[in-house]
Image (cartoon, rainbow, N blue to C red):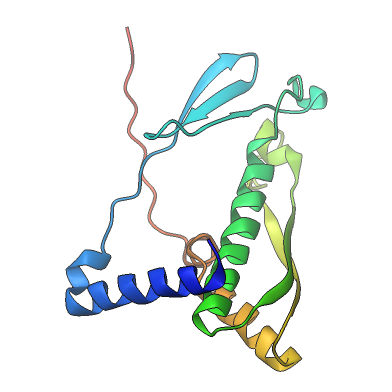
Length: 171
């Protein structure tokens, strides 16, 4: 889809939601991970989406796919890039280059249970955005900053939603 088509789709959806704000609410499709071999998991979605994750050999995996933390960083980077592209299209700005990278630090003692005082969570989240297009540098910076503030994955990380777990023991 090219920028004018993206802009038209965004404008149409925006008009629909403005006319009926209840249409903005959505329950997102689940992702289901199933352990298939060793530490490899197959993650599937309701429309045939499929990815396989694994851990590196140092953690007992076979490196048969990206690890879940990398997918998290990939989700953040691609979500931010998508929102930047959407915002640029909405403003009629053509992008010549867009790259978003996401990095984190972690302490494996948390995941391995070696120290209960250390979180398994990733920390020090950093994103780097490379962008070029037919707009002034300040405008491109504003688009990137706006997208960061409106990226669903980025907002979820910053707002830390309530999380619940339901455990079902299978027979």
